[in-house]
Amino acid sequence: MTGMDVIATAGHVDHGKSTLVRALTGMEPDRWEEERRRGLTIDLGFAWTTLPSGRRLAIVDVPGHERFIGNMLAGVGSVPAALVVVAADDGWSAQTAEHVAVLDALGVRHALLAVTKADLADPAPVLTDVRERLAATSLGDVPGLAVSAATGAGVPEVAAALETLLAGLPAPDRGAPVRLWIDRAFPIKGAGTVVTGTLAAGTVAPGDRLQLGDREVGIRGVQSLGRPVERAEATARVALNLRGVAVEELARGDALLTPGAFRSTVDVDVTLDVGGGRAAGDEARLPAEAVVHVGSAAVGARVRPLEGTAVRLRLAGPLPLRIGDRLLLRDPGARRVLGADVRDVDPPELRRRGAARQRAAELAAQPSGAAGAAADLARRRIVRTADFTAMGWPVPAGATAVGPWLLAPGLVDQLAAALPGIVGRYRQLRPLEAGPPVAVVRRALELPDDELVPAVVRPPLALREGRVAVATAGLPPRVQQAVDAVRTRLAGDPFAAPEAPDLAAAGLGPRELAAAVRDGQLVRIADGVYLAPGVEAVARERLAGVPAPFTLSQARSAWGTTRRVAVPLMEWLDARGVTERLPDSTRRLR
Image 1: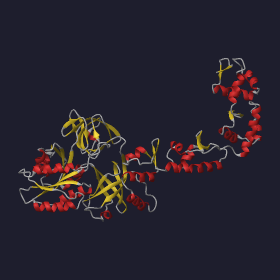
Image 2: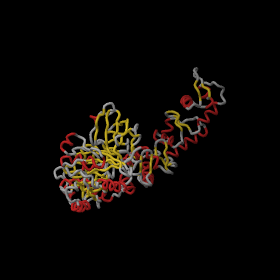
Image 3: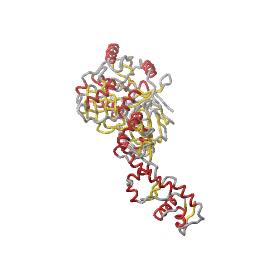
Image 4: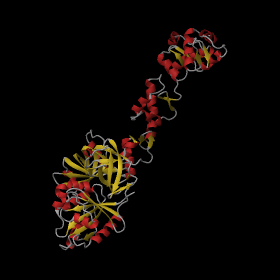
């Protein structure tokens, strides 16, 4: 099992970031020959060390050259703290400002300032100037130290200050789902494909299965800080050996995810962060197109301002986002970055006039955490529980789970209260039917699935044969009178089923008879043959007195009825398992 702290460097090209990392770790973070030749970190480099306390620290050394700002963003996307490096002989520069603007937009709150090359110039004025500038950003009051990597002066003090900084970092959520943004992918002979990234939450272990796009991949092995481990816990730099995926199928910005725990989306509502050191008018000057950075991903987006700081983004490709994620919007034309908080990953369509303004007001009023979850569920009414939690919300107290569905607090009571009115109106239009079919109720209550209907049915309503019926509904008075007359006749002669003309004359057509059967007042033996409930027991009792096996003719005599009734009645009793038909067409009681 392995956990560590991860920190990213930030600062101008040539201000000595990589040299300081080498002095702290004894490792060479630059990855490519070209970088060493040119003295530039053009892609992400990684180094690690064990601090004097035994705390392990991984350092993501990000590029300082302006052309490689995208790589810089990939490096700091999942990292909670930064080491800001400024040279004593050069001071604050436009590129320092650009890197700090990225940290500010990402909302990074933990940092250490190292003023390097202290052997070449007096570091004191630079320390004072830079700390003042950083105080206006999300980084706040940043401790600063002078250091010379060349002479080694100040390196132990920087290591000690890093210990203090790391001790103040919030604890990572090791029980959270995994979302590992891939920052490098490469083949290793004999091992297959390896990817690296910063594990910001959760744990990974060999044998785990993670989602990659629309498929699952297996983890063959996990390395951390250059050695195989049985398990890696956040926060950690990890290298994963993947089973069954070629390196050509992967790119920086892909993410390995706990299956089912994230929702890929192309439409996302955000609120821009225009506090701190950013201009409050920034949202008014938004570009129509921007690049969205999250983790190591960079995706183009169309920007639609809603009102105030609320903005809708239409991404050029899907990203696995959650409510509460921090995005960075980069305007490629204006060299400007803005931080944005994800507020909805399944936003409603904006069709009506004024819908954008109303949506902005909803987002402005939406709280975070449990209160936000309750407000969002109230707006959605009914949602699949797995979808709701994949958005990043906790299940609110008082919500009702029905199968895979989650209903807003109080909604079941509200729907149950509306149901009697729906049943009453239906029966006014169709008095011969016991009540509306389940599908009709689902549509009337605007439910997404028939399986939700039973949850809102309460006495005196009940579910009967696929309908929501009043338990004591009964038949219309005229029909009830005719059925009563039939029942009186059958009480005296249980097998004297009325003929079709008699039924029609009494006003009992097919619909009325079907209603009487549904209501349990008559039993349909066959088309045109209706008898009273309890006829099965009477028929069995009469047959018990006939020696077995018996013929249809003997049964007809025992019942005292005609072939019109006896033939279908015998088949009905066969089907119900009361009688058994023998090969010679005689019967016996089962």
